[in-house]
Image (cartoon, rainbow, N blue to C red; front, side):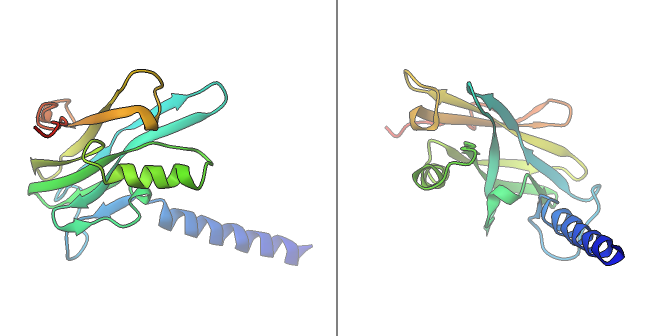
Length: 176
């Protein structure tokens, strides 16, 4: 009985360690030693709750790149830390498909590279400030799903709600 409890406790501790290491969700987009929250700017992508008649989904703004630094496995990170200064932050709209696999996931991967669903936002990040990247999907006529998104507009706000990158600057402009 004690051996069983000890094994269960060990398994629980290992699982907790694994979850705590992988759920930090913060991508450091600077080199060197970790800086304090007062020395960096934090940028997070907004999440949006969506519900159909059976399921609840969480769509979100994800990060693809900061300056020249690509973010691999970007769905793991919900925040980015940057050193103060001007940065080019590449974001995309991530449409949650729940447990669907195959073509549906490939569609999301494809969408993250499309100019209509992603954008590079340039702004001056201040040390100690927290920013949020917001998104507004614009749909074509009919269904409101990923196959029917015309484009997504993005903008950035600081922690006081001041607009740092305007909707106009983060809007999709079709090629002429």
